[in-house]
Length: 286
Image (cartoon, rainbow, N blue to C red; front, side, top):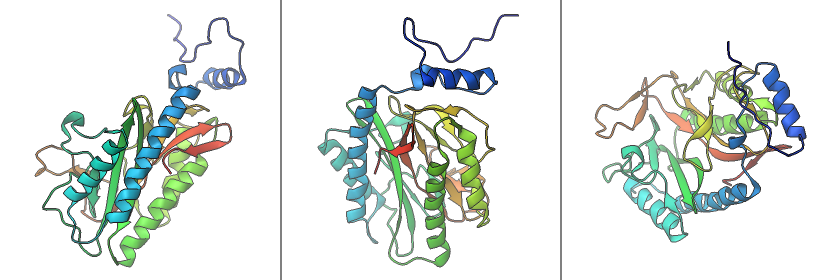
């Protein structure tokens, strides 16, 4: 039987580095390891970082202007104008048929909400605004939750705990840890509140493409999944439901994008693009 081809390859004529030794050690133990192509160069990291600056500016601009009585179509225009005005391209626009440049997901919409003139924000709504920027060919991806005016204690807690899930996931993301360590930490925290952690969608590698390896589920077991090593860039973006973790796609959505919580209870999400370093993750979308 032919030998299984290793994922990690040494560079011809180059000395073996500490990174090589650590990755090959875990590969020899049967663990899933990245390909070298997932390790970003310093030049690529700087490109993604610059893209992240624009992406953060987009969400900052939304934060300055979002209010009750505005439509999600107005949010789309704010995002488009800021991104293109700073040399970027909205990655979502026309991506696999998505018709707008940003995802605006209100209350029970888990993700991929499509901006519409008729979707007008009301007092007490919670909304996730998810934007991805392409700048000079480099991608960055982040989302934030916004509470419109005063909402219920239940929604307020959901938004807060979901942000805590992101922060706990980032803390669990250490160099030479595994993807499953992140999901395990997030799921453990969410379960304290009896929340459902969405399983059908996940974080992902990002930087040179919109979606790359590895997938980053927000549930899981320690020590499972791909080894995470310095130089990798990926998102953590937990989607947390007050009720069931299950979801469905809105049949009335002609584009087939909007994802709704199964029991139509509120959902929340926070997201950052992250660079793995020798000391932990660096946020590229602050």
